[in-house]
Structure formats: structure tokens, C-alpha cells
Amino acid sequence: MRRCSLAISSRISTRSAASRLDNGSDDRNAHRAGIDYLRYTADCAAALGATVVGGPLTGNPLVFAGRAPLPVSEDERLARKERCVKGLIEAGDHAAQAGILLAVEPLNRFESDVLCTTQQAIELLDAVDHPAIKLMLDTFHMHMEEASIAEAIRLGGAHLVHFQANENHRGFPGTGSTDWVAVGRALHEVGYKGPVSLEPFRRNDDRFGVPLAQWRPPHEDESERLAASAAFIKSHLTLTEYRR
Image 1: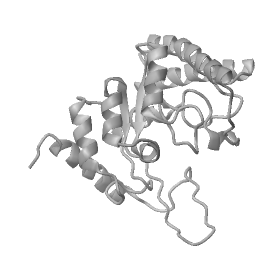
Image 2: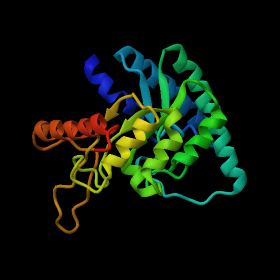
Image 3: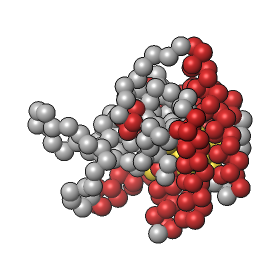
Image 4: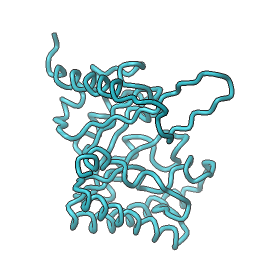
């Protein structure tokens, strides 16, 4: 169980988000519950022997909250940022006591209306300025939001504590259009030595009208393909410092 916890540590707080658990909410109870939930996930991570809790720690992502993105006034934008900063500082204090790092993850625009790019994450981290609040990046989301994945890695490298290596279509790494040579070289350039995880949720049915439910159990044993994907990423990371 402890070995498994190390693999899933970066996702402990991402799921089960609901509108009543929202660190960025203007509803006092939802805001309080969001902070308490982050504190709880840090305790869970420590009990499991994990070291990182990551995900959309700024508040519930759109797809899980069942709400559409709405424009907000500049005053509300700044107020939301202030609430997120305040909540992350409090949660960070608690996490630090447990020896846990909290890593904010930028999501694509269809899943978050708060934090979508690495630049936005850096702005938030600079405002929080807490040693226990760090950054997690996911190449799936970066494909949609970053002008250059490699440049974004270099931008956030100093804060990066967990990296998710995913294809543009969420399939097995090596089957999509991600430039893994550029990704690997960027990680090498920033001196990243942290965990790299995979989060494939493949589309295996291309019939018209079949939705893609990401969070579903696999219908077959994918161990061999997952092992091949992990080996593919490892080989790129191993060879990344070489040019030929």
C-alpha cells in the first residue's frame, strides 16, 4: 500500500472535489471546507508515506463541479486570488508540519477557470511564497494551454515537484504528438529529479456519439502497455543529456 501511495501521491486531492469544497469560493463555508480538505489530504498522504499532494488546489475544477465558466469582474478576480492565497498558506502551514508538499496543477480551460497556465501558477506561487506550496505540471493540459511545453517547463522548473507525462490525447506515451525529446531536455535543463507519473485515459471507441468518461476502471489488463509506456519515458529521460 505504501508503494502504491508513492505513485498516487500527486493526485490525492484532485478528485472528489465538489462545490462545497472550494478554496477559491466566496462562500465562507465552502472556502473553509476547501482549506480543511487540503489539510485532510496532507494528513492522509503522511499516513500513506507519500510526500506530495497535488491537483487543482485552488478550487473545484469545472468538470467535477458541474458548472460552466463565467466571466468575473476584476474585483472578483483579485478577491478570488486573495482567497486562494490565504487558503494555500494555511493549508501549507499544516502540510509542512506533516512533511508534505502541496503542488498546484494548472488544468486546461475546459476544467478550470482559475489556473490554466504555468505563468498563472508562477504568479500564484509568488503571491503565496510558502516553502510547502509547489508546482505540478501535466503535459496533457499543457498541450492545450502552453505555446511551448518545453518553455513552460523551464519557466516553472524551480518550483516543480511532480511531473505527469501524458500524451495530447491521453493515450499511452509514445502514441501521440508530444515531442518527448524536447520535454526530456527541458526537464534535464531545470535539473528536475522528482517523480514522473503516467495518467493515460485512452479513447478506445471512435463511434459517433460515444463520450469519453475519463475516470473509469480499465476493461482489460493494460499492464504490458503501461510498462512499455513507462520504459519509453524512462529511455527519453536517460538519453536526454545526449545530443547524438
